[in-house]
Image 1 (cartoon, helix red, strand yellow):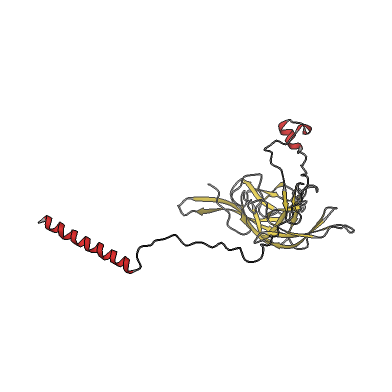
Image 2 (cartoon, rainbow, N blue to C red):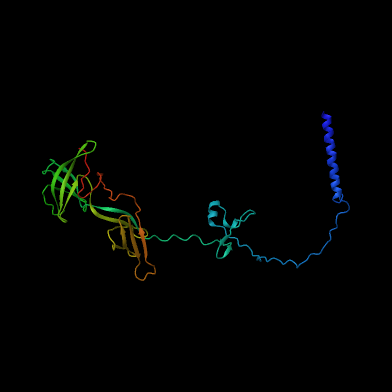
Length: 308
């Protein structure tokens, strides 16, 4: 059976071969003869135009003298320096003049300091502070107060006149304060009459008291000027240091910042300068006290408690 199929396949192959040969003869026969000749033709058109190229001008290289800093670090004298095979040349590019072997100008010198800076915003310490008491904790107690303007202590009692300090203690008592956790404290407290302003104030023992809105900016002059502190409270405050005059043109306690105008003596060629200054310190509003005290209070506020 297998031989039968082989014969059938062989006959079909011969039939296909015959059909292929017949197709070739019908199309003109098999290719024959030599390939077609290629005819040489001269080129047509005009000659190529030369492309424009930049003219390069040859100039001798200008090598920079070696820097003194290199001699200081290597110990090699400048007259013994040389350029080796792999020494890269130093060249610079300037958009205005192009390439150059000469070093450009160095960085511009820093401008001179403005002459004054803002240290911080401060609260002014009230002129009288309650330091301590002795005796009974009632109207008969001996009270010791501090005159902060002169940094002196003076003794007084309830109802006693103090003409030099212009204050009078109206009342002294122990105020008991109960905290949320149930702990209680006694706070030695005086009621003080400021006879200069006719203002009644409440002071706690050993606490710094500040009057509301009695604020100022602390500025400080800078070298080469003589260093000095300058308290500023309002627009128009000025400081004359001889070579320049500083005037406050704006104050902002919320920022906080101050704007200072710097002017020069008559005949000077310098222009006026104006600069807005911000604090250079991050300390609290209140100045630091030499004696450790509880947190400060504003006038009329309830004093912080003192341990019983």
